[in-house]
Image (tube, rainbow, N blue to C red):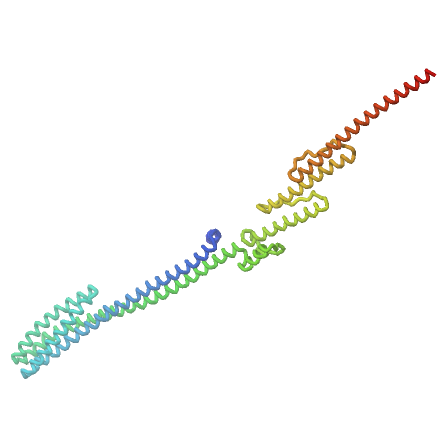
Length: 403
């Protein structure tokens, strides 16, 4: 059933294109191409925007997060080093120098912490961050004790605390910071993989859209060209040349059309030329026959329409009227030659034919009148002759009697 459906759709499409003007067809073709270009551009822009979003997420979220957590880890590590050095220092001026290092490291830690908290993007990361803050608070509480012991020059007790409970809390804090680093690195890697997959998908989709657009454009172009060729019936240059020849009065040309072509402009031109040839050939035959006195020839009107049929009908009417008028004159003259003056032309004619009819009929009437008068005179003469003969006979008889 599928081929039948496809053929039906194709036929319906051909009919639709056939009913459109050439200007509309060409405009439609350009519009389709422009729309496909616009659609392709929008689609490619959308896909590139998605790739850019993935890249932006890596550059503005994951990488800064990794960098910030790494800085937090470095800051707390430096702080730990300064703390140990502070507890190990034996001179007050050294402890003062390490006090400054502790303050600087803690300031860096808090500044980085303020930056990092804005980059947290998942509940899991937020939970790890909250645990890390609690550990930092616990560590700072022990650090306060270490610093107090160190400032009192109780270095052994300070180092014991540093290497004992403080070290456990520091290890826990380092582990939590490493988890945050690993989480952000994993998120960055995942975002990169997603970006790569998105790029590959976008690239494939764009190529697919390009391929579809090319196929669709080719189909539309073929349909438009087929429709134009079907309407014209041949190449435009050939159609124009045939039309030019006909316009110049040359109809002795062989118009070549496609098989079963009956609807194109070229087929219509061919039909027109064939019918014109029929009319003109019919005119030639009728006129040639009329020139030798044969008015029986007529133009075949079968299949003719419009002005061609009107031309044929007019010429047939002319030949018929001329032939009828001459036949009427021949009939009357033939009767006249046989001494029959009773014939006349009764058919209605106009113009010169009507004048000829009047002259013939008047001539016959006058001849009949003259003949009638001549016959009447002859009868009178004959009667007078009889009277003269009778008188002469009477005189002769009287003379005989007197003698």
